[in-house]
Length: 176
Image (cartoon, rainbow, N blue to C red):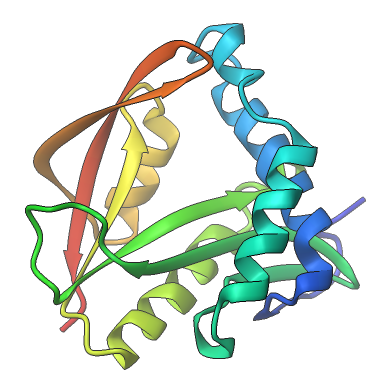
């Protein structure tokens, strides 16, 4: 069973694409299974995510690659970030793009440590603020965002996956 031993963190490599994809889909489906329609859960596949991550990891600079959390050699979580993608934010704002942990390892502090790594990277690249988009219906992640110092900033967006539209809320926090 994962998360029984010590967890260590490192930058992802291209060889991690399959493990990241598996955590991404497992975390996505479990976190949202009671919050969204089935079509939304099925709109992404492990193979599709593996191809995405393999491509991303091949392009990213070494100091910009996602962070992975490992129990032994097994990837149990990951997070990545970079410049914020929203037009209304200035160039000093970064974003946590993705944060997933395998469901068996939830509530073990892994998400917090992954966000800390991403936030430190953003500070090291002179970002003063970070944003994080959270599914409106996901009260667990909304509470997590607040617990880690983020606050709702009043912005929303709609995401379409599999023909299902969901609302996300933007959270922000200072990095200075």
